[in-house]
Length: 288
Length: 288
Image (cartoon, rainbow over all chains, first blue to last red; front, side):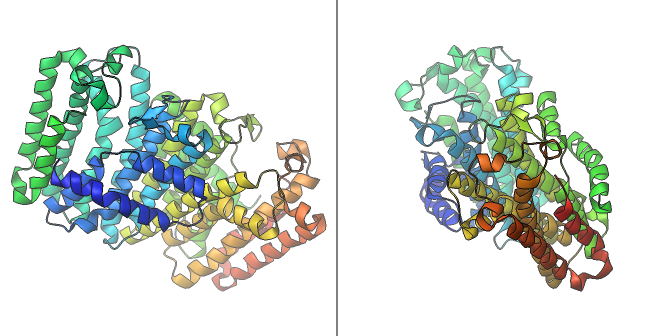
């Protein structure tokens, strides 16, 4: 595992627990539900990206702590709400009961609502310059909004095969927007200039898509035990996937090309971006 | 009706429609649901407070447009989610079908989620100084979080009579926090100094409670047709109310006292605060 991801998995839980403990008034059950939603085996890719982007522009890792918490809160809230009975009605998430199954529907709904608020609390506080915080907030709020757009695009596409362009639009909104926000928020925390922000945004856009293409590939070739969900599940649901659209080999090639573009985007950034490079390669090589 | 409230009811719908139209990508059904949630006969008290507070500190009304949209988005989102089957399971809101009844549950859930994001988009954009926007965001996010706290306090209190202090805690979180945020965001937009912010916060705290006490009083003495919900509904549910705790006359007196304290808090602010004074008196005199 890349050092960045390993560090994120070690650093994040304590950081989030401390952040949550500083919020007053929530009852224990909702605290537990929010913590459960955030600690249910997450890969911590988004916090890792925020920290990695901050380091890549010469910032100190701790300057991106608020960003790391914020993006993961938005991620956690979206998963909890997506799993609800009126949405995907999922019982399992990463092999564990979903939040509304482990607790109850009202608690899961409110835990998600609270996590979205907490994301903005995390950004709004802290010692970064106000201009940075305001820009981070704008980026994160736009990403959170885009995720709702993506969720709708995804739902409306169920049961029919999308062409390449609309499939990309789903992914760019549903998952890509938050990955780009994670990188942007981290880079902003590290004091990135416009050129470096643009380079990192290109990196984030490409790994976001590569991640999704590789996910689709894993659904075809992966092993159920490793994936934590049944291989072939997407095909069964007649979901639009890159292998279905392009064929398996071309989809694998696309993921490699996107990763190469992500790495090329980092060229102006020098050795400080090595953790992000390692992360991009790892995401393409992962088996779950 | 006070000029401030009348102006808010005139100004808000077009402002919000314009704001919503500037957000890209949402499907028409979700746009309709969000617009429905925001236009379903709302009193526009919170936008009026934001604008009134901005004017009260010598600001220009349009400087608080972003704040007015933001607080009403949070209000609208909270109503949509509170009405959902897993929460209060309400079919009617202000005499009209609730959002999930008019549309569907998934659409209502996502409309609420999107409205929370939109609130922060509204604050993060705009031409106010970054320091103002960052502080506004911190205040609004804290209020949104407090509303979840209040919702839990309220649910956990169902079926039992609360004492005065825990009842106040429910109201301060569930409705008071956003009313205070509305005033604070407007005052910040108008460039308020610390002393004026504190005076306005005291005003907001008192009218928030007065509003709630008066609501409870109306539930006892009000007329079903005017209220839009059945009078006595709170009593039937064995909800904790001020009249139940204090007796009807003492509850009416409490609402008057709180309104007097709100007016006293505005004394340092001079004639610019007259619209807020008129609003406080109106809220106490309203019959629905």
